[in-house]
Length: 110
Length: 135
Image: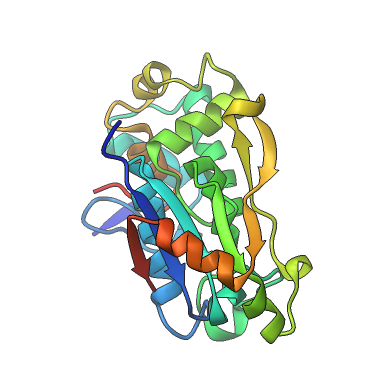
């Protein structure tokens, strides 16, 4: 299974997480988002970029509770809450945003 | 919640060469997500898991030591390291990475999560746990 970006194919697993993390590009993020029925805007990019930075620093994709707590700490409580995050990513902010950010499935998600 | 148990994850092995250390950390992160009382203990070669400046380029494994620094986000606030194990390997507290957590009861002040304790104190930590999982 694979995504198509600018004529390139990028492999992904049965749930849509890309196999090789270094394949990620912003264009690929748009393609994954479309497959998830999500339109990327500034707010969603902010979360996706936040997750990529988190992974860069800690080498893990955070669980949803930890993600929301960290967003609250860095971007403020009006963004770091369940309602806001689930509005952006209705099928789970950690799961969906990690997929779009090209990260592995969050640890602890089944 | 009344049914919170004290989980102690006991790490005795070097970080690489076997999968034990990485798997232990994964289980810790999963256990912490279920809001249990989670502590980690590092004895024997397990103390190498927390050393600074790890570089895994030559062995083709992921360097997961940065992930320990995320434990504070998961409300894991106690990482016990046995002093004798450090000393036997020529290490001291200065050779270990920094792990902090934010203390909810103290205006979210950042505090160190790593506590170097003696072998005798480590025995007490183990006796105090409801569940000890050894890796």
